[in-house]
Each structure stands twice: as structure tokens, then as C-alpha cells.
Amino acid sequence: MQTFEGGCLCGAIRYRASGEPVNQSYCHCTLCRRASGAPVVSWLTMPADGFAFTQGQPARHDSSDFAYREFCPRCGTQLTYRALAKPHEVDITSASLDEPERAPPRDHIWTRSRIRWFEVADDLPRHEQARRSD
Image (cartoon, rainbow, N blue to C red):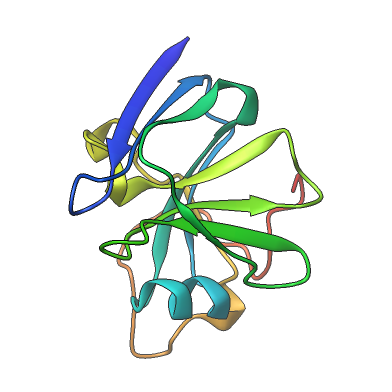
């Protein structure tokens, strides 16, 4: 079993995630881009039963009819994405991990929404939408 820890920019929110990673992806979807203000967001998907906030209380934003995001109400750091159809999983922003190098992305999802001027030069698999197992 692996354990990951992380938190927000200002230090008000901390979390711990234990278990085996489910997915590690770059997401190019419009919702992730707008929520982060970045051309792509990397996510570490972990079992929800092994995830807990250990310090502070995040704010919640229902970013769509099918998911919500949690973020620091003080500094705004986006921390999680939770799909209502997958209550057993939690997506954690990889860049909010204390050691993001331990969870490198393994693929790209929602590439049909990719900003055309943003190109990632790697050989990772690319999926126009969610991967088929999602």
C-alpha cells in the first residue's frame, strides 16, 4: 500500500491518501482547464476510503451536474475532483502532492478538448475522451 500526502499553497489544508493508485493522468478537458487556469491538469486517482483531509476544511464547488471539486477557501488551490458516479474514487491534483514525482501521469485524457497551442512532447497514450475503463 502506498501513502501520499499533500496540501494547498498556503498550508491551511493538508490531506493523506493511502492505497494503490487507480489512474494517473493529464486531463485536457475544458472544466479542468477553467478550474485551474492552466492548459492541463495532472491527476492521481486513489481509493476514496483511503483519503482524508488531515488539516483544515476545504470548500466545495459543484463544477458540473456529475462532479464536484474541493479547494482551499483561503488560497484557492484546487485539491480534488469527485465524480458522483464514482464515489469509491477521489482524483487528487498531482501538483498538490508533497512528492509529485512519485505519481507521474501515465496517459492523456480528453485530448479532443486540448488547447491547440499547447502540445506535450511525450509518448504517453492519448484518449479523445475518458479512457475506456472509466
